Image (cartoon, rainbow, N blue to C red):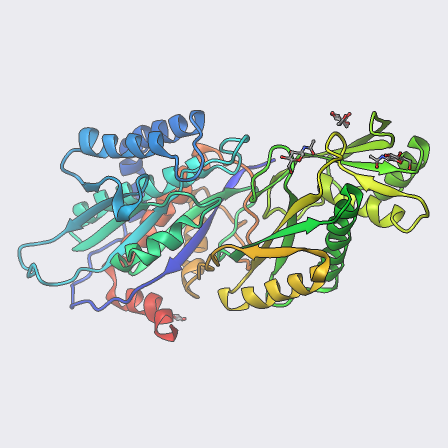
Length: 463
Ligand SMILES: *[C@@H]1O[C@H](CO)[C@@H](O)[C@H](O)[C@H]1NC(C)=O
Ligand SMILES: *[C@@H]1O[C@H](CO)[C@@H](O)[C@H](O)[C@H]1NC(C)=O
Ligand SMILES: *[C@@H]1O[C@H](CO)[C@@H](O)[C@H](O)[C@H]1NC(C)=O
Ligand SMILES: *[C@@H]1O[C@H](CO)[C@@H](O)[C@H](O)[C@H]1NC(C)=O
């Protein structure tokens, strides 16, 4: 699989700039190659260290210290470094301004920000490559800084280390602390398995609690709800590019991670019948999923589905879906009941529905539809903070994809502009270097051209 990063842009705040004579940026592409050879290797080492030492959201102390130490010691005087920024212990901020004597200190300079993530997934590590997001932000910002100095472009560059993307909506906390008011446009690149420029979907988790007087009653309610939500999604969710992915609260569990192994006990059937049913369901739409079915000590058949698992934003059918469809096929048969192998005394089962939609505006209608499908099967449904969608300025993606077609960026012609954002696999450092260099190029172009900047931030007026 070719692993390549994608690009996201977020716009926030408004730019009111003075008149600046634009610099000649015709040699920017070649300058950035030279600059990158100088700045990238040290930053790649930081990313490699973060990858070897995964830390989950809000616990990213090692990653925080690596960045803060590097920029205070190795890059002393280049950036204003704020550790533990915005009241979050693992957030940080880097700031740089290029000002000529002609510009009054009171004049606000055009600014561009880069967002860096560096949290890992529980039990998995940096599966979806947040260490590469960190690298992308640090590299793009460092390259942009050098180019601004070289071209004498008065401007400001900010990088924010944003903790806890996976679980606790760290950027929401940062936004409440006004962290993103400091720049006009924010860039971020997330690794995935295909190139694309796209917005990031809005997200909310629905924590659903299924209870009954018997264990098998609780399992049945939970799986009935899982079937209902699958049917709802198959019929079309409200909003644009909306999705709902269930995660069962068992075993190695985290709300953002679809398990690679799920067991469902089936009582009142035979191993042969269960194997036949599952085999009839399991087809090529379940990539890399397999199963075992054996009699167990609970008195039934332990069906265990095994597959790739991974990030809840992935849309492929995994092990949990295979058990849901098996439940659907068998649940109406007389005398069949279901249980969790090895856990048959539990009277409750939790399922988290990871809900996403293209626009923040639509997320509550998707949530409402999911809640309606679950209905009174759940004892209670709690939700967390709405994670807002990140928007792409209309004409920016075309500039970036054009840049990628030039020889300096590898003559790449495979950059579509999409509306759906699967965030899955790791990306190689080479790819991150190219995307970071492209973002640095775009940032310098924007910072150098007040008309283009005003155009890019015009989207904010709709706010
Ligand atoms: C048993 O249930 C508990 C509580 O929900 C859960 O933490 C654990 O992972 C479950 N184990 C199995 C094998 O289902
Ligand atoms: C399976 O069914 C048998 C017979 O009804 C029952 O004795 C046993 O407790 C059931 N086991 C589970 C785990 O439901
Ligand atoms: C169910 O089967 C799986 C796969 O063989 C096994 O790993 C798991 O331990 C079994 N569960 C119980 C409770 O025996
Ligand atoms: C401003 O945006 C429009 C489309 O939104 C585009 O056609 C135009 O070229 C842009 N102008 C500049 C200077 O970037």
